[in-house]
Image (cartoon, rainbow, N blue to C red; front, top):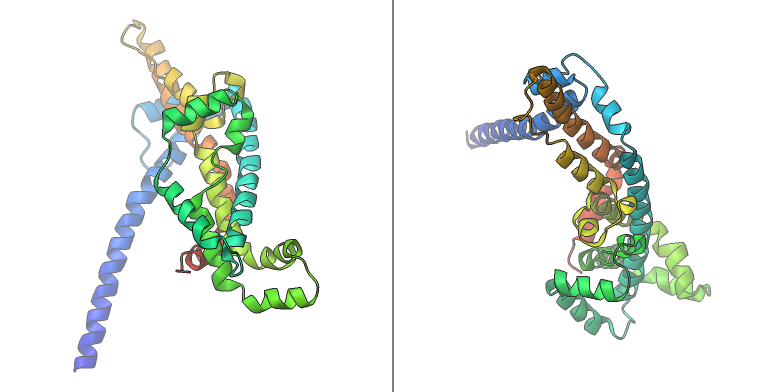
Length: 296
């Protein structure tokens, strides 16, 4: 009797969880579906609120308006540079910092870890950082957009823990017997065995660099250096048309519909590369995060 009661409780619990998960999926998925459908609909259908789930009066007008704007291509090129090179530098810095901290024979390990924790909790703040970058002559340069955020203490801790928990100490001893140097051991043994963690850190860095707009907004002045996110912000602000002073109703409706349509198309254009990249790294994601989050 007790066994049947437990099974009934488990089934009830699973049903409740399924209902909650389904509701949450709808809440999360519907805005995404709505944005995609709106971007492929006509401006009139979007501005009049006809789009609910599927595209209405299918059209590519929104994407035509976006890609006719030269700065979109400039922003794409800059963002690819900032995200690609910046993420590679971030990954190298993370590996080079995390690997020594994972070694038992590193004499300054305890002190360095304490300093890293202090740096993770306390920061100089925006104004001192801006003064420093200005004194270094890096304001309004591509170089600062590339190297900013090159080191993340949390990522170093995750990768250090991954190295400690997944790579046996015996491998290092065997490598030393074979005459492999520390650099050779890192390149030939540690990195190939850490693809999961490396993929996660790389994905974090790419997404962070791709979506960053605050740093370029503070430090950039020249529009030719703008990343895609700043271009998107610029276009969205320019698309806010004040139709109250337009007497021609037809013209006002066209301007309003074009502005609404561009917003949704811009969202898709700016997020599509990351959406394409994620499935290729997804299989490493869970393993890398879970292994790197273990206490070590």
